[in-house]
Image (cartoon, rainbow, N blue to C red; front, side, top):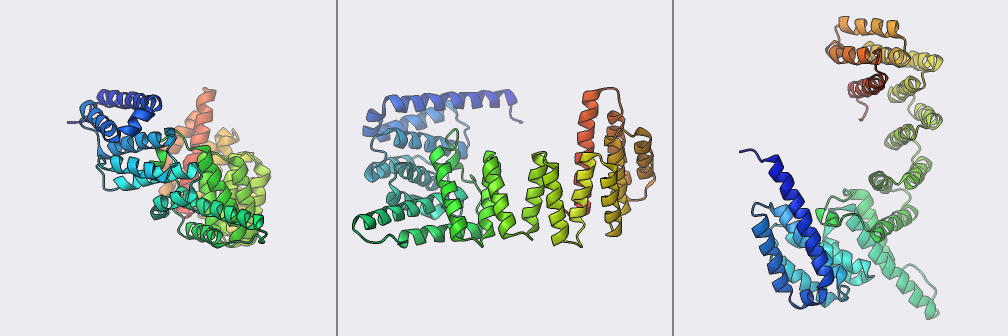
Length: 399
């Protein structure tokens, strides 16, 4: 029998309520909970079993992770290794999944790192650095902070500060991150809190910017950084990383492509055109930058620019079916109805695969030249997006 959507929504709302109540209870009763951990976890499990008898293992274990982190984060003993191990040991008894230990280890490691207990945090996190870039950066950060302490101690003793073993370990960790490029926030244990804590974000960016100085030839660092900057909407860091990529890897098409799309998102037509010129210089035989130039001219609506890129595309062998689509888009977004309809009929009569695209195109063109301005704007956007996707698939340009 299919799951009842109303029941699912009710269950989700109930889980949110239970989470809130347990977190509040931990804040108010942390001393008693710390003294009677087995009793508390027994109460947690009984509540889950009674209130949510069909709860899946992943959600069940995430709930255990959540309350465990809250205990560690709330208790004044949360930075002390014996207490951390005691809490983790009690929580582990009630986990169901095969990766139950991983979630608890990460909770413990992150709590110790937050308390600046770096030497104790590393063993909890070390085994999971290939699972998530945030964990790898956290381990590197722990090593790096230990190295700064070593250097400070050396200066106090009159010994010239120089990179020691811990800094080398931090560099090695970031080198592995650059080469393996683990995903970001892939481990669900990092997501049990409502949002990423600022200190973890700061640790990631400190290590990434440091590693860019230590390892200038590792493009993987920039790839991971761009993914993180995109996830958190960090425009300033994205600009800085793209600038670095352009300086160090000026002939790297994936980075040029990323920069082009970023300029478009920022509505920086001049900047996007500059990237297209750079692409054409670096890859004179490629159709990809010519297509990007065509796309820019569609957005600008300038006929001479469009004609110039269209001629280049023709000279470089772009298939006529794709050029017909660009002609349709250019005339449609330029409000040239009769020309757009003529191009549409050419597509309908075409023996090429674009003929099968015709019904969608016809529907959108009718809306573009319809009487509803709002609908017309949406149709223009849909036409450009759908033709762009179709063309890039046909030209093997990454989406």
